[in-house]
Image (cartoon, rainbow, N blue to C red):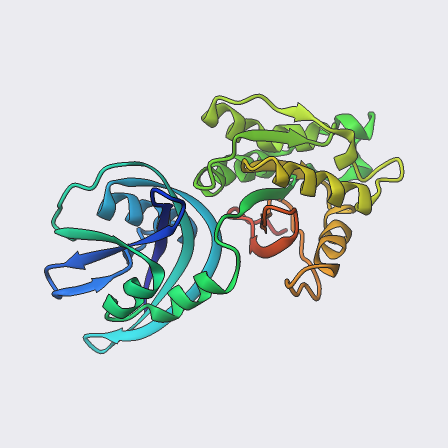
Length: 293
């Protein structure tokens, strides 16, 4: 199985219309969305952003997952995942993989594509201009029963520290502009590597605490208000609050969440429209799994 990933890169043209990038690959003499094979051990979303950047020269801001395609290459099955990606900056330079690029309205792009039209269809079914809120559960912090001090001060254990470090590459591709955390040490420590990598501080928000009667409706309102601000935000909370908060958000949205998961060191990329309605929810499981005894 060949694993690959890519993106539907889009931008606002002068006047506000949406344009989609399609690339010409001289090896195949076809027009496609930018994509490529994953490196060994590379997370799919990280590989998708890397391939888009390498093939187009533009820096993408990853948004929601769109679709997957499957076909055979020289008799071997190939699986490709695609994400919506907002073009933020950069310039195209012809390279070994891609010699031309066109920015086209979605309908014209679909007519030109050799395949990947299903990806374009998924892109067009939901609002394009969305804001991503990354809802993260803190990494592993040992056993609560073994901690003698104030539980609010319980730190990450060694596995938790590795999990926190592994989150950086995955979350960075969404390019969060702010980082918020519950006031628990394990939550703050989980997003500190991300904050350091982005040159940001960690803002404390007690609404994100599960203790002291944490209210999922209040937490959902906080996420909506952050989304209306228009900038991606990373938010770290706790396992007792995250699933119920997701359920509240999904009740008045087109997103179906039958049983929201929240493993330690996992993240949800939540896409909101301009009115603060949830229009997409993608789950990213922990990259570093807890050690088993």
